[in-house]
Image (cartoon, rainbow, N blue to C red; front, side, top):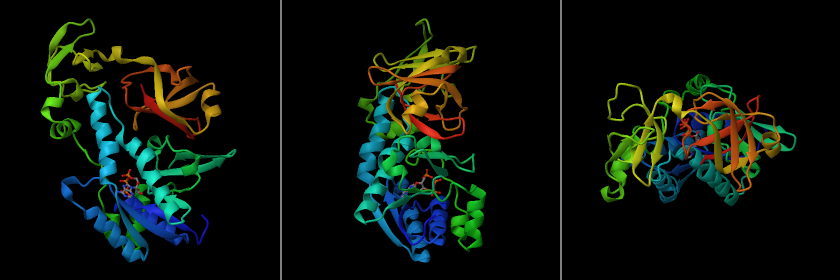
Length: 350
Ligand SMILES: Nc1ncnc2c1ncn2[C@@H]1O[C@H](COP(=O)(O)OP(=O)(O)OP(=O)(O)O)[C@@H](O)[C@H]1O
């Protein structure tokens, strides 16, 4: 890392960005921390106080940026609208690609700071005139899956101090320096504004009259199997919590918004060999469109699959899977990698 340069770091108050602050400072950077107020569960602002206190202890400048309205408009609204459209949204991907890193760059620009940083567990690589994101040393924490939408203007400015550490290392690093609160913080889980069940979130946030009410579960032939609570409460691939008891295992195969129907089928019926992507971004077009095969992942923790990718005349990407995949859900993200783990881009499943 270069020294005596300025960097703007997103400080969430959590372990990772706190350790990132320490590492950047030790590497000789003049760090400014910014904490975004995105969403405060139960109005709690402890995270903000933690980030501020750490910045104070490290002697770094800290600013707070109120992004609550923006977050509500761009992320929460999108999240709700996607379920109401019968899709399965990816709020963390959208937040990273459309909010977090863009805000960091904007604020850094205003302050005349070049480098921008977070506590993400990813690394960065420069290869043949392009910057790429590659998986972190800690494969279990790897967050590349959420960052496929970033372009060179952001990639070139990123500093990623957590990419070469494991979470355990990070906790030990903070503990060795006497930052016990940082070392022992719990990991955040799931979507920050809706960590557990999205269904109760929808019921709380969406007025009753905007929800479709009860509808039919159908089998693949169109026979009525029973009642469901309304299509937004079901996602493709779902098996648990269907509230219907049949003498065979069934999964959600299709969510039909127009008719408020949910089609249930055995797992074997959920496999597909093709999908289309919209809103895509290719960090390297020739490594994806020109490649014999690339690797595609459609869930953070799901296995990688091989595919071929082509651009259609209508602008979408067609992804032809070498092995069929189950639970391909509209609204979800697909991320492309090469065989060495280079993140090549991604898009939203149509
Ligand atoms: N409210 C926020 N304000 C500023 N930066 C944030 C905020 N939330 C997240 N970030 C930045 O984005 C990074 C990734 O966030 P994410 O919530 O995915 O990870 P995390 O593992 O919980 O990180 P941390 O331990 O730092 O909270 C954080 O390390 C931090 O740099």
